[in-house]
Image (tube, rainbow, N blue to C red):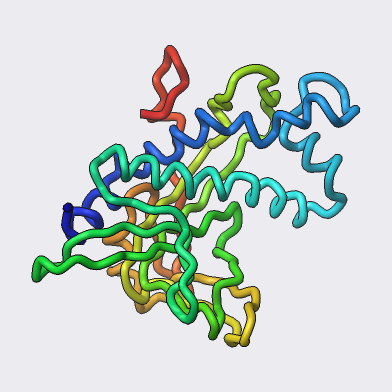
Length: 240
């Protein structure tokens, strides 16, 4: 069994970050496939066309697109970890324990078996949002934080699974302590919250970044996305 140190080193490697985006693109056509078949909005349907046909509000359009991709990121993270030899598992529901999107069984520094739980947060916005601030569930200590910019103007593939080129820019950080600060008060069920990086966590958050960067501001740090086009294979368009 691999160790917790090996796990965090692997997930903070830039290759892991790029692999996430690459693998999601290879399956990204699936969530949008119905657009080309069920909605009468013309040929060469783009993500912008699809979102506009579903939601009137630009904010809701963004949420719609983000949620569709969020589950792919979670599945891909587990897939990549398992391929690397880690004992990664699906979302684990435990009453009065850490709510999570996936978990990994590893050995701690003393050689004892432990389970490390991760919440994966993805967003197109400046901060992450979620509904995990719950008394009943508890908060995880480990987050895989992902931000991205979509190319919404390329046609949705009508054959195959891949949707290469959907991601223009990306930011990835894997944090293991208190780098993210959530606003909102816990409830007995669940309440929506907003998470950002306070300036006090500038150094530690910077060390957790595997793609992109971070800028120190007065109150909140500003995350910086990195251009993904520079990592694409010129012949295939695959992120490497």
